[in-house]
Length: 357
Ligand code: NAP
Ligand code: ZN
Image (cartoon, rainbow, N blue to C red; front, side, top):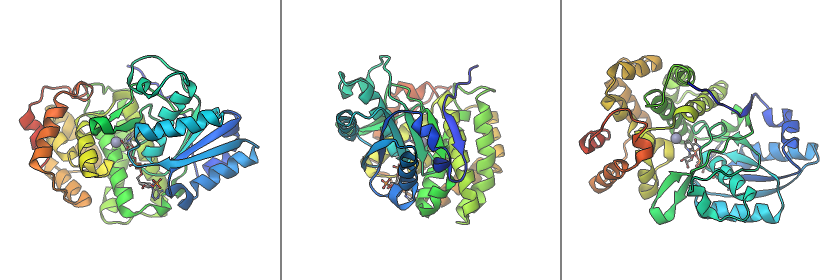
């Protein structure tokens, strides 16, 4: 059993300003990597700019990361970073800008290589990266994963390299601008990380420290989430669950619901958390170690598998998926070795199809 969680985490109100010195220690010129709008609206971009100014660290901003970032966008940002001679990165936003930052940090450190190295299994370094999350789902601020869209393959895939952020600066106040669907979808993503980590080939008593803690905390938030009664005081808890869930999958990886979500997001534009959530109730119900599946439900405070699936249906709403996509998706996951190996049992196409009602 092994625990390896190298990211330095600061989690508190006004975290970015309070730890401006941590950013200054990372290099001499930063590239801020963020999305098009939200980091301006929620104040996170301003906080990072002020922190860098207070330490006399120069910076440039790349604010063109789209949802489900593509390899093409990563290359554009990398070109800017090399031209501007930046020596560290600060990713701000949801999982999309944070994931993109990791791939950009790798490409900038290896200017003689092109983007094909993202999907090659060779050891490569990366420039230091700090992450400031503004959604409560991916935990990307502590995970080593970077999932990019591959338009040529019409899907999304995790890059081959593990890139750990050096520092994570977590502040729940950035959630104040997030609407209900953003909070719900990303909180369900965190829930999926917890469940797919607990019910996983690589889970053990040591790494379940994270998933157990996260599942109990998620259980305490579940009524507020469905009744739309999340208050400012809950933002910190949501961010905490997301981070702990990230630490859980750092050790185990995700499993079938994540693998099945990518085609749904690519072909139908369904947000990541919602696409994963569609398969989550089904995953718990087909999981062949029913004792472990019951442990998950009990940590969350659900009385039965049906109650859990009903909850997910209610909170996420219904999404019609064509029979053709469901079939294609089931066939494709059966050849996705990296996800199949995290599911400890054999599985048939019929069982996969039964996961989505
Ligand atoms: P996202 O794609 O980063 O952002 C979704 C939307 O929310 C964007 O329109 C964004 O606006 C907006 N937004 C972000 N923060 C906001 C805030 N505080 N208030 C209002 N709006 C806000 O969403 P995400 O669910 O966090 O990330 C999904 C991505 O992460 C997927 O690509 C998924 O594959 C990946 N992922 C990674 C990991 C990992 O371990 N690395 C794990 C799970 C998922 P802007 O575009 O203007 O910023
Ligand atoms: Zn996820």
